[in-house]
Image (cartoon, rainbow, N blue to C red; front, side, top):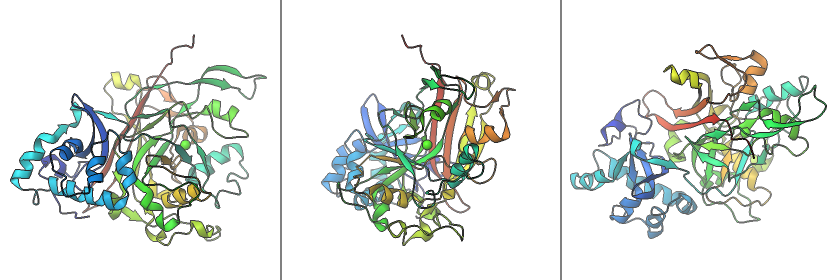
Length: 432
Ligand code: CA
């Protein structure tokens, strides 16, 4: 990463900007002109479809130029790291204050759309969605609620636990989330009831969107795993805890999870996070070593130092013009399993990953109070959350808006932001 690089898009050089020239996340945006692939720079979106049509990507392979004209990122994801890096280099040239000639600038400037004039769409057609359980602090804290003596199950340190989620209900940030109805049964009740969940929760996660993927029957070696990660986004795995508690045994999460999952619209390339790599998951001295297929030769740099934030705002707070409450602050580096290990494990049985598949980390929680990635962990042990409006919350109420933010930042380095992943819980119309 060239930290001194600056863009002629002036606002991108502001140290507070989430989208400097060193970030360049991909997304899909809609304007009157249609649905196009774009790249975020400052407060604007560079239209890659238009760049491709106007010859600004000439010199790149025809398949790369073609992929930029698609309405989703899947064709670009399928091309792999060499294509991604060539395209990224070209976009950087077009936006660089020193490299872009005045004539280039004049051609590129009209292809920038202010973000406020565009509607963001899902970045990819997501064929399959898998959710892991990679935070040992989340697994331990939640496990303790059910098994105080033995919170962590015996398989946890050997196998990256996950389940298959549902892709059809993945929505982009900003869409309202209907409170789901389902079966619940309290401990005191003799029979279940059907109705709206009373225990609506969020789960703070990071998602990896898959690049080329593997053929059915062909595993992905751990040293190859990151070649299959196109980029990262924020994920909110909305969860109905009361439904979950009643349905999860013996086959795991089902309707308590699959009613909605929100993702952020911008996909941050792994290349933008190179300077923010850190050691992969730390294992305590008496922890078992991972089995050989999960041992990474680059464990020294398999982690990512990305700060994650959960903000909550009730409708009362919104009406009163109050700032959202920062509920917690966590970090992607605290996971017990790396993204590379999750990819390799997922394909280890021969299961094929395809371009645009979403692999989410599971709730990311730190060890300390204040870094929990969901309300369940906070309110079951510390009591209700006090909102600045005088309200309190065990779980989410209708009108509550949950926003996740993430950024990598360090003195002397550009800030790499993920944008926002937001959703507001609303009451569902009663089924007829
Ligand atoms: Ca989850």
